[in-house]
Length: 193
Image 1 (cartoon, rainbow, N blue to C red):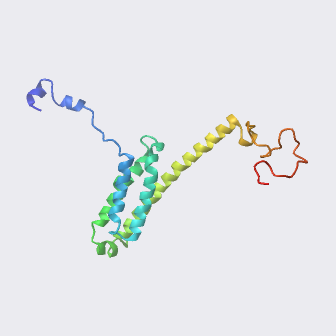
Image 2: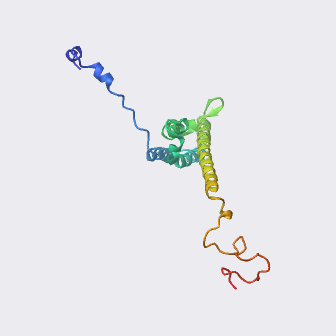
Image 3: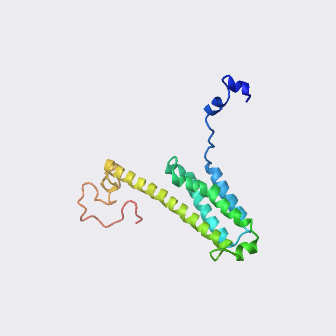
């Protein structure tokens, strides 16, 4: 912007008045695609211990991605799942894959551990963390289901207390007009003779 325009009313104030553009959060498809790409990069290029751990994280992300809205807008747990899929997991795996295999798998680099051991520890931590989040979401869904069931029982009663038209006699209670004793022991209308 020219100094002339800034001097006579244009410039930085206009630029500062524009709202900053915040990128949209990743979609479910982008989250799943990111974790699948990491899994593809490890297949055949990393030891089975790494691939198995990445697969564990990928499966949980696949399960969680469509359910992230249940965690609420701005949720720390939702952020953790998204960051795991799009940042934490790819960065850890890619740093390991950049190393020469012999160095990564055999050379001790920190506190008696090789790069492979360090990566496995990181993957275990990521897996355990998103497993806990998945369990919390599932538990919340189960609690909601139980609460809804209790609401329905209060509103309509339990199935055993309902007297629905068309109910079959003998299905849990004696037929109307009978005492339930001394009935013939023959087959009911639904049983074969």
